[in-house]
Image 1 (cartoon, rainbow, N blue to C red):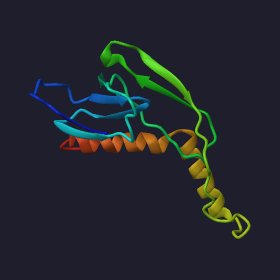
Image 2 (image 1 turned 60 degrees about the vertical axis):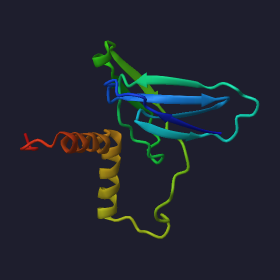
Image 3 (image 1 turned 30 degrees about the vertical axis):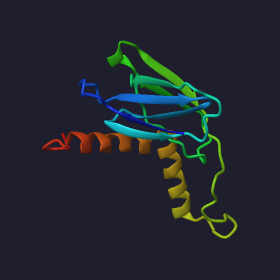
Length: 147
């Protein structure tokens, strides 16, 4: 089954709205746009579906590297929507790729420093924070990004 949603008129909807379309057990979620097509594997004997509109009330970035086995604690600020912060504990599991066979490499001073630096960055979530800062700079494009 294929559904196409076309906006009838521009009602000045906020930029942070999302549309969920559900038929049976399958749900598709996407950012609200003028026109979007959704394809569902099968509708079976279903004659009705559901369309829901959501608005983002908070967001956070997250390190999902499975080699970092630590439990992550994130806080999602929902103050703009009139709520407090939502705290979550996140465990990431999955297959960890071995970049280099540890038996083939002799770990010297440099290898130890690199590993320690990577662990430090991962432990404190610095890669995620730097990514967020870079995204904010690219979005706002201030005259002097160092300020």
